[in-house]
Image 1 (tube, helix red, strand yellow):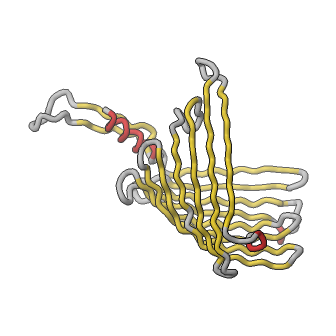
Image 2: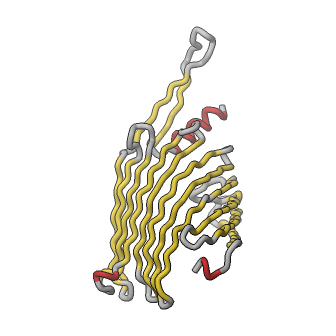
Image 3: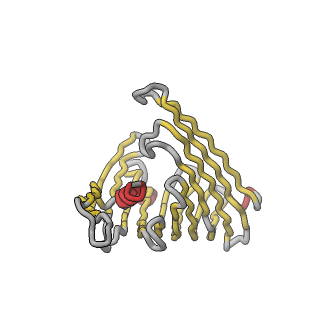
Length: 251
């Protein structure tokens, strides 16, 4: 039945289990129903990874992450990321740093919902400017159907930029809103179907008083060109705009 398939997909989407199997009993129970048992194979809860890059212009870069798939026993996720670059090409005071932490909890208002919260910080030194920022956000996503998802969050972003024109500070509060329709046959390796995204982010800079609205739309489509799906035609289009304030308040 479709209900069992949906339940299996939802359990696998938690990323806690390697496999989920539903098995019907051979006989009816006292009420005339068919008992259904569930067998699951759990993945390792903790994971981590490290990596590195090297460039004769950018120097050495190191990155790593650590995560937990089932932090409190109800499929809560925690992931911590860190990255440093510019080692060897920059002075120690001009290295680039990027770090973040993300928490997710499914099922806060039903099995189709997910709560998420995170903090991300960036310190970078491109040739034209120095940039430091800290952003925190929290929100909720909800699957309306298997193909439709909506999400809403509240975010606060502080950034400090030093360039040839001086020092600039921003403290932007925003409410990102998103709708996604996705009927691709496979989200990781699609061979047919399409995906549409609509995004709006009302924002307000607390320090300057500037209010503006970010808008973005994206669409992608996939079509297999042969029966074995070795060749797939993919198209993508995107459009965006910022309205409500002058460019000088955004730069």
